[in-house]
Every structure is written in structure tokens, then in C-alpha cells.
Length: 132
Image (cartoon, rainbow, N blue to C red; front, side, top):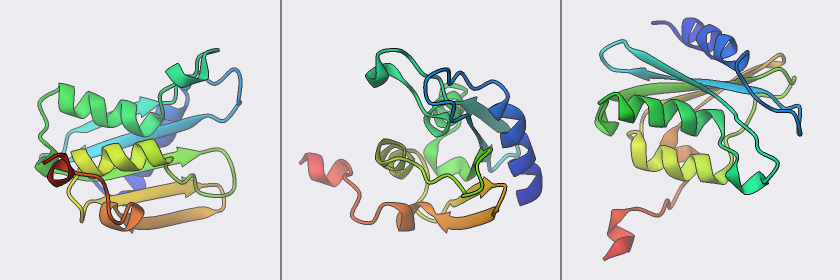
């Protein structure tokens, strides 16, 4: 699957976003190394702490389907805004746990696409070594 196809799939996932408060709809898709894709959209709640971002929903769907972190190749996250959406801190932490450090992250808005790897998004991430 090409980068453009993964971004297109993420835009399709964006259509399922539930964002009645922020009106900031986000879609995301995870590409596994075996070619499967898992998509998610952001889901808001009147109790803001219970919201879940598109990136985490897509990653959790992949893991729940049996994809192991080492087998995640890329993640695309998109919004309808001009500026490419940057994953929040919680999503960056989850990405650092559930994706290889060199996995590609594509962030796309109407103004273009930004590419980074997971390790660059959260240098010095909290990990299992910090638990000991």
C-alpha cells in the first residue's frame, strides 16, 4: 500500500469521527507489515477525559486483531484543517509503546503532508525500562 493510499483510507475513517464539541474531526489508519489496515476516528464525550483520539483507536484495533507492535509499519493521521495534525502527547506515548521507533507517521491536512518516525515524535519516551 502506498503512502497516498494509506492517507486516503485515513480520510475515509475521518467520516466516522464523533466530534460534536470540538468539531475537529480526525481519522487515522495503521498499516501492518502484512498489508492489513486498521482505522479509527476520534470519539469525543461531554466528559472530556473520556475522549479517545483517532490514532489510539486505530492502534488499539490493530493490537486487538492480533498485530504485534513489531509488525506495525506505518500510521497515517488526517484532519480537514490546513495544518497537518500533530498527535497529542498521549498518542505519542501509545505510539512509542505499540510501534517500532522507525515506523513511519504520516500527518496530512489540506495544506500538505508531514512525515516523521515514531522515535522523532517522542524522544526520551517512558518505556518498560523506566518501570524497573
